[in-house]
Length: 249
Image (cartoon, rainbow, N blue to C red; front, side, top):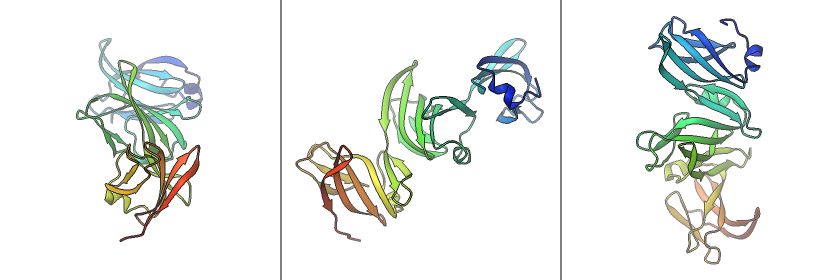
């Protein structure tokens, strides 16, 4: 079992690998891949739960009893839902090596309800501390989230996006963008923002336009060198009203 290769692992759909041993340095490797490090359990006996060729869970065993369960972060193809990878800590480097459209499972909010992706703060949801979250990620940027409790979805949110106009790809996702973040946008389109009930459009803490005849409608913004230059009300993908903003520095 020590030399189980990637081809053999891919054939395991719903299996448990028993009598697996942690290496001296606490590294867990199988199928030619590094899975995680268990430095506090060198040479420990493990059971590995494998789903669709991917290690999903690790159990540390002692005398036939489970002393620790480690559930790994799971990565699914965003289009097909197929399980394609797992990891202990999802870093920016790891994200860069994954497909452009993925779903990330088994990430958790902190004890204060804060949510992070690859070390980057996303949002605070204080009502749901230590809650399991599913994230939809495109080009390394979170685009949507779902929070679960007892296996049931209890909260969902779509993030606004800052799209690089040169590539069409997202550079940032956010709920409320700060002025400091907005200043970093050189030539971007902002999507996922909605006008208020009075038609007011706010961005980075400032009112940038008002559409009194389009309350609660979807809007898009053009940002150049950190400054909003255009705001559009969008229906069915087409702009139905547009306002140009003065470039005041």
